[in-house]
Length: 360
Image 1 (tube, rainbow, N blue to C red):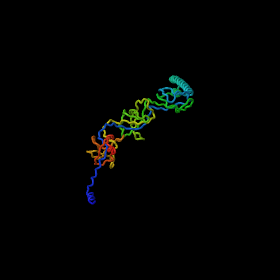
Image 2: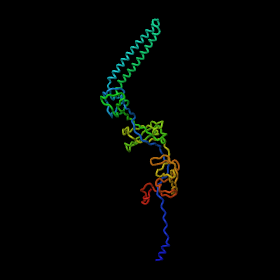
Image 3: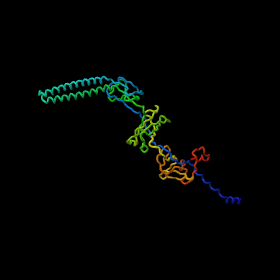
Image 4: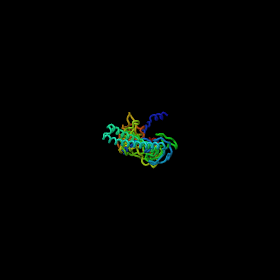
């Protein structure tokens, strides 16, 4: 028994096995051709929209359109009672005739006075009076003509016509209703062309130009993509939002869109350029700076980087990484600076059961 105990005491303890390096996903950095864009949400608008109001007082005697109807430019939409405007126009025309007769009479008196003054039959003062009478009669005639034009316009304004072709959005009057000047009557929209006023981040879109392409995703049409172009760029940053306003016209949409829908606009803001981009999962912060792990001969080494634009799960690398280098893109929490790592493929189906259990 003693010999067995002594033999057990002198046996060598087995050596501790070294832990395997942590598995990570890695990628070789390549410069990618990227088109700079800016994304914003905006409401789709009609090309033109007008709230038509009454320009004269009167009773509605005829309504010729309903909401939803298409109308052409100049088409009669409704009529007001022209009784009072017509009477006013007749009175104004009569006043014009009277003023013209008085002017003719004053002109004849002026000619007669000139002759008498030349022969000494009248003093010079009478000639001045006659000239003043002609000027007063001429002014009265001009005023009467202006009143007549205004009265005739009242007759014309009693017939309401479409200022442009479009669709009647809403009708706010009924037959027999009395309207005062300025009363709302109809709402008309031209939807032959749709547009949007989009506010873009000036840090991304300060160089956007007229004609730039836009990709439009409408929330009411999931899975469908529409296109458009920039037709106007604001000269002044919007003071309320501090954004750059641009106007975008939508291309032919086959009647699939309507004014009032909300859409996401992705606008091209510059020429394509080559950038180094990495997944955000591979970027981490240390000591107030952004870092990546660069793999050199199987060893991960921490390196400080400078980021540019960030979006869609990727970050632009401005400084710190060169094309051709391999970086850890997933599993950075398992890595220690200067330690070995095991690079595993992104396709999980190619892993063994043991590797799959340790997959980052």
